[in-house]
Length: 91
Image (cartoon, rainbow, N blue to C red; front, side, top):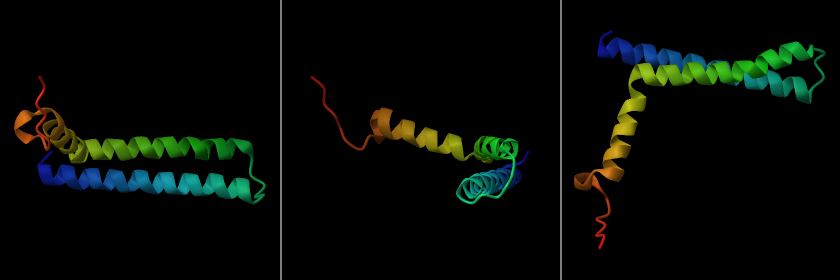
């Protein structure tokens, strides 16, 4: 998959995961706040949808390449001596 298509596909997955989390969370909260008369099974499935949405969002971040770039810069900033913000001199 080319870089541009991977970025677009990753963004789509991240948006889909965020929408899934938002819809699941709102359904669970509304069913607990207001007595909607829905079964507990549907509420439990919606709560599980929150975790599924988070998993989809993480897959989208991984496919889009956002996760690796952030980790690389964090590693350079904290552990590579050439790019450290503070120069520590240990005895």
